[in-house]
Amino acid sequence: MAIDSLDLKKSEGLMEKDNSLTEFQETLREAAGILNYPPQVFEFLKKPMRFLEVSIPVRMDNGKTEIFQGYRAQHNDASGPTKGGIRFHPDVTPEEVKALAGWMSLKCGITGLPYGGAKGGIVCDPRKMSLDELERLSRGYVRAVSQIVGPTKDIPAPDMYTNSQIMAWMLDEYDHIREFDSPGFITGKPIALGGSKGRETATSKGVLYTLEMVCELKKLSLKNLRVIIQGFGNVGSYLAKYLYDLGAKVVGISDVLGGLYDENGLDIPYLLENRDSFGIVSNRFKNSITNQKLLEKECDVLIPAAISGVIHKQNASSLSCSIIIEAANGPTTKEALKILDEREILVVPDILANSGGVIVSYFEWCQNNQGYYWTEDTVDERLKEKIIESFLNVFNTSKQHGVNLKIAAYIEGIQKLAEASRLRGWLKC
Ligand code: GLU
Image 1: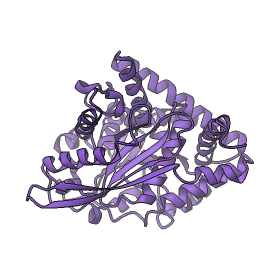
Image 2 (image 1 turned 90 degrees about the vertical axis):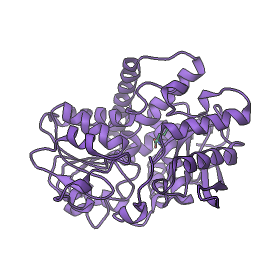
Image 3 (image 1 turned 120 degrees about the horizontal axis):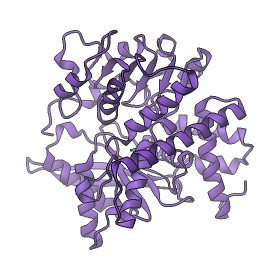
């Protein structure tokens, strides 16, 4: 991971201004309205219950000290400890972290996990930092938030540009502070430190199982289905490989620098072999296109698997797909979704489609608490079971209320949060 000179901010300039928190709140209000909840439910759930902002001094390799800003948002802990990843990205803002924590709460509600949602973030550009600097930053973050996290309080995990090595450093720092071994403090760890088999591929598998459910519903076959995956990081690349192996035609992929499209299907194994550690491969090809162009190319299924806000009101009318599966968090704006609904393009929402990651994180935490480790087949089987059950619940709710899958997913999630809060005596609803 010795970092090249790419600037994450410039290379990802395809998204609209981040509006995640407003979008989360508006959709939450709509779902709470459909359920006829009193206004306090929305007032309570629109923001995290707890939000911590920290400054982290890190000694850089050149001997100077840099101060990094970090955040941890805990949205709601009525159903259990809070749970959610930590992202390292230059565009991290308090608003985005708060929205992401809210989405985590909904995700845990939809999938029936005994957690509320949380999210953390550090404003940094990991591609411009050395491994030693990243280690010092990771440890510094844990020291800064150690009062409010823990295996029965708030359990972090990987998110954008964080991985199992970063989880390992964070676990080690936490163990030093607490003076005992607590593998259940963090998930997405390396297997040698108590990680779960199948955690690394869990989000992609969850997206795949979701797509299989959609195919079943629409009487489509995965074979020769034309799929575009925007993003070739952890989620996008495993997904591309699974789809390729199952005979689907992955006609497009992209990374932060550009996209590749071939109507006859791309050679995914070749692309996987030739990407760098940040998933970048498009710069090796002369005929690469922009991310924006790729989104508008013809396909059956479009899977945004990178950043938020890439499908917006300016491009929603130009998309040439009939199904969108949101593998990233918040890739479709509210205005775009309205246009897509009118165009009868089916959108499977992020808080359902990408829940495989947190589901297997939960399995990892259960294994840590038990000290008993499962086989990969057991993990896979239980993941599939949970995704299918959650998908059917959301689908039936959408039919029952005559709403799209996004609103239906919010309804499912908010019901769990409201019920747990009511039973604790926090809300009357
Ligand atoms: N960061 C992932 C997400 O957004 C996983 C969270 C977790 O495993 O706790 O769902």
